[in-house]
Length: 373
Image (cartoon, rainbow, N blue to C red; front, side):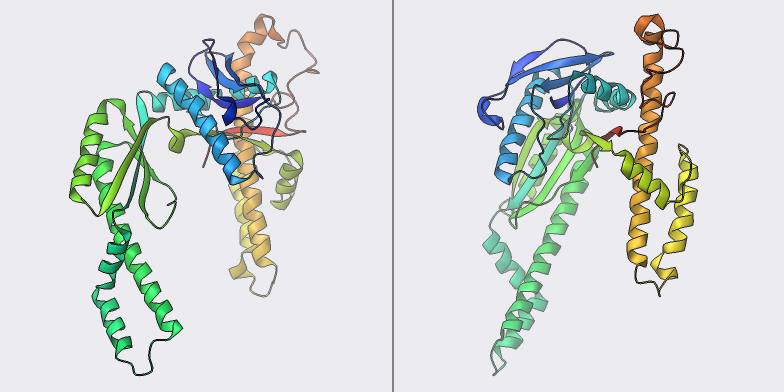
């Protein structure tokens, strides 16, 4: 079952996605909702597919389909929290489990993104050849080229490489200067921003901005001012309004018991640990004992140091997963008490949720719902 995103309502909803945007045209293209406690997941029936080893062109097609559904819902339903591309659940039960575990986080995000939109700003060099020529006129580069031309031995391959590095550094300096000016101008009319990776050498800026819907006009005006200011130097493109892809995309992380067990042993933790202060103490003890600076004679110190840091991250995620499971119990308890499988129906705890802190804690696999980093 493929999950596109989370809606802030439990209203029933159905739509379809073009077959050409699916992995296989034989797949179901019907998209519908699964509700839970006033929120719902937007899903499509799908086989379990591993997205991590797909070709880039296939991923690009699937990403278009993923975003098409999300943005259609945004247009019709106003607010949606996107899920990471390739998020798949085993069945409807697991979808509800995801909504239950992430409930508090999801409701908190809806409060944060209420009446907010994302606008992506990209800018490319207006004429890259002219920009490179202009960079070549910088004093240091110009003097170096004149020195080479006056050398009777001629210009070597190393000399040409050095000129190339100097030009690249100058272009990077110019790019950084433009980025700084654009960020400074637009952050005055936005709530947050995130810089994304540049797609190629022609791209100067690729930044996502989170803004109030009511401030859209002021934001657009600032972009127009920047376009006029950098006339012919940069070509601007404004993409949006979009859901908060860059700021609040959710992902599901499944922690395997074997990894949790390994991490606990690596940090020297003997019992279940749910207190973050205890975790930090265990981490500090281990990191001090294996730090490469304190063990210069140990050739494995760097590896051991990396292992301790990885173990700390696993247990930190485990602690958050425990918190989410605890919140899940609190949400479910009132409904269980009126006939949904509460303690009065299962006094021994025999059938209690194994992932619940009130039951057997994570003896199988743990699930964490979090904002993508």
